[in-house]
Each structure stands twice: as C-alpha cells, then as structure tokens.
Image (cartoon, rainbow, N blue to C red; front, top):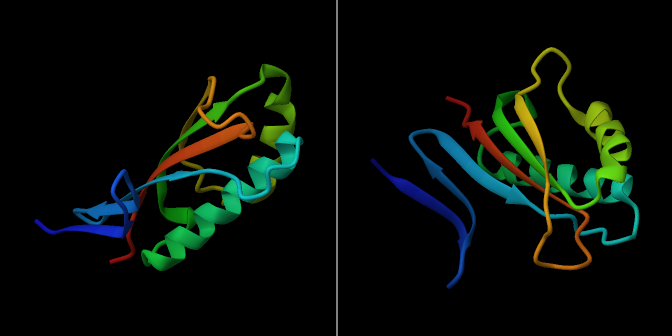
Length: 116
C-alpha cells in the first residue's frame, strides 16, 4: 500500500494519505484573540488540504477539536455549525487542551476519505 505525504518536512508532513484516507491536523492562520475567527480559519485550512487531496468536508469521517478555553465552546460551535456539511457531519469530539503555540486557541484533527 502506498503512503503519500503532502509537503513532508523533517518533523512532520502537512497531511498523509493511506488506503484512500487522509489524516490532517489544522491550525489557524488567523491568530487573532477570537475563537470564532480562529476556528473559521482552521476550517478553511481543512477545506484547502482536502481539495489538494481530492476530497472535501462531506468525506470527513472523524474530527477532534482541541480547544484551549472552555469558555470558547459556543464561539467554536458557531463557526463549526456554519461550516459543517449539513446531513454529513462526522463523528466529533472536543477536548479542552493546552496547545504548544500560545497564540493558538484551537487545533482540529481530521480523518477523511479521499474521493474514489
């Protein structure tokens, strides 16, 4: 089975595809101090990588959202609800976590099927 690494670097790859499944962790490019905007930014990055991998948000199987502040849960959910494919939402969990880059309020890890 082939493993395809998208933008591999020394420490990590941007995404990895194996058995027609893509694995990706998204971080926001908008580092404003606003969980809604950071979530929208991270979701937009997911859209970009899925397009590069011949997939889209309707093919996401699993999503884990790592949220720094519990108080940002409503703002994060607002951005998610505006973005998620209605009727095709993945399995999802949200974890309260300390992230390694202080500016990040959220990281999102997804597993998605690649289009056949």
